[in-house]
Length: 232
Image (cartoon, rainbow, N blue to C red):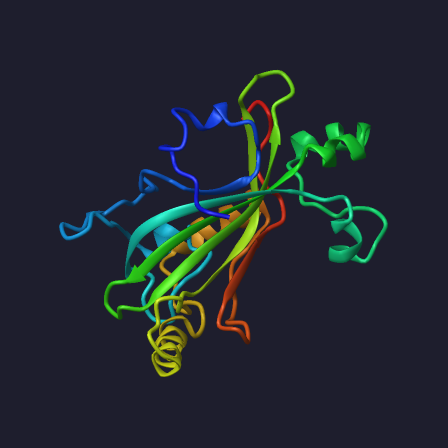
């Protein structure tokens, strides 16, 4: 389906549906924003700050990335997804501790209201010109007491090369080669502050940063203790 924007309706909360593909009309203001490019207004971040150190380049966590846009993709979590994804009769979803009781009281009703959430950050590594997508996976659930409010939590994600703009198979292969050179492994010599941040992320969110590149060129991370809840 096509990307929906704020020009479709005055307020996205007035939409009669809760699924769709959206393009955010403003760029992210994550902590560590370095500024904006004069040419196209892209937001500039270091890769370490953009990914909260979950994804780090091979040699330089201060590699600058220019964020061109963010898209959001929301779809219903089908009950049949349980068996397909976990090969079990019961769903295995990473839930914030504050939502565990609500789920246990009525799992089917809980999952009936559940939506998959995927935020995609489209960026370019400035020094190398290679494009990528930082994918953040999570879930969203309507707040039971506050209208038009949705609870959101993230459970992990991945970062991969975006070769959709490649003009030929050769150009696509060259971009992937550059991507592998830049993101071949995570940073070995982390700074003391990065080590502190990673330790806190592990303790608080059960974070498991990307350790190596997958066969498809992606890097994946997991948040085993996601943070969220209706009162967050």
